[in-house]
Amino acid sequence: MAAPTEITDGNHAVELIVCDDSASSPHDNAGDSAGADSASEEIAPLLKPEEKPKINIFSVSHSRRKPREQMAKLPEMETSSLTHFILWVWGGSRYSGILCMALSSTIYFVMEVLSDSFSARSIPLFESAFTRCAIVLILSYVWLRRSGQPIFGAAHARKLLFLRALVGYISLLSFIYCIQRLPLSQAIVLNFTTPIVASIVAKMMFCEKLKISDIGGLACSFFGMLFIYREILRTQERRVGFNGTIRGSHHLYAVLLGLLSSITGGISYCLIKAGAKASDQPLVTVFSFGLLSTPAAGICTFVFEEFVLPDLYSFTLMLILGVLAFFVEVFLARGLQLEKTSRAANVQYIEAALSQLWGIGSSRISPSFGGLVGCLLILISVCYTIYVGPDKEVE
Image (cartoon, rainbow, N blue to C red):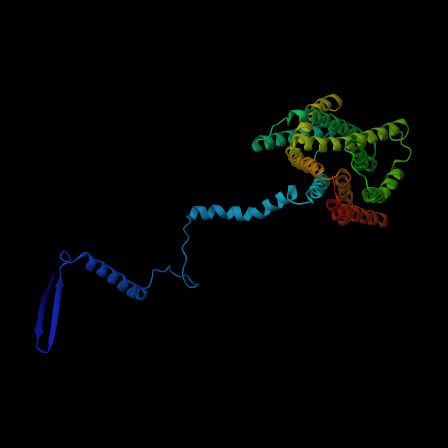
């Protein structure tokens, strides 16, 4: 029902019509709703929808993170590159085995530099070996406990781990005796036959293929090492002369023990490889070696030598060398686990080249043609191993 009302005001007239919804029929209501919908559709384009605020280069952005979260993320960003590099070297690359062996040899070279550069109180060899083995034992135990790995390894790998520890300590014991009875250069030359022995033993134990490139690489590196130490051997030969403590039966006995150290060292390399693969954890082989060698070296210290109490300076140097020895063993075990034995062992000759170059650079060794040729042969062999090794490896 509509009630018209007219309002007049001089020149204008306005008519108002009031509609009663209750009185309208359902047909009228449907028509009105349809009209309202059409009207809303016509009005809708005129209304702008809600838009998200635009951000340009002149607007100031406010982070939703708390200041503490931002400060905590800064060290993570700083250490991420170092962490990625370590993980890449450890197992993120097809070159990881060779890189681990190269790091092991480089750290061992750093140990030699520290021992030569920082003169400390003379410590007996067995006492030094006991200190290093104890540090290796402690650090490997802490590492395994924090990582949640079984300390003694898997049950099926414990025999291999025990043999690795026993053979490894026999090699260490023989090398210490060889150093005490022979000139240092001769003992080092005998010790560098270990990679050759390890390659031969791996051929028999794991049926690893020794290709011509592998044999050529080992031969090139070994002859390079002989070129490096040839002049040193000649110089020592002139100084020693016919000294009875070195010549005769004692000399032959020391050489035989040096060869025994190389043979047992090569076998130990293969046992490290087998134990690391069987337990799937190279740290277990390091812990097993420390567990056996620490008390054995302690007994030899008090039986064969007099105990010398080191001063603070010597003890600090022994601790640093012990920590570095731990990383040498860890990277050595990881490299043997990942890479073929002959190629991994060949990389160890880089230590001789680095020692020679350091001696020339520090003016401790006069440069010679033979030494430079030896360094060049070793670097060529190692670079060739890195270039073709992992790509051609098929097990």
